[in-house]
Image (cartoon, rainbow, N blue to C red; front, side, top):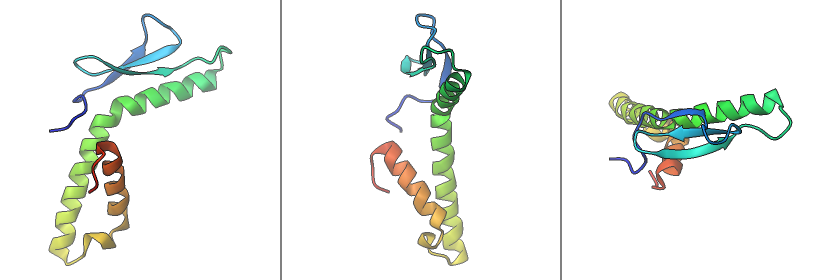
Length: 104
């Protein structure tokens, strides 16, 4: 069981404030991303939307990464490799630890 709001997460321009994207889970609003800096800068707004998309995808990305680490760890052991020999696993473990607040 995870501590975060389960997927799916979505985002949309706020009904209350057109300068923000709201990120929502099934139960509630999770956060906001500012989409406007006062200058109608399309690059700033595009970056803000990309950030909102990434945040909304976080639960699925997290679950996929955990599954890949578990599968690769098992495949490495079956092949006679130490999982520490697979450097991407260390990067993945650090990302998971950062997301969960728990050392892997």
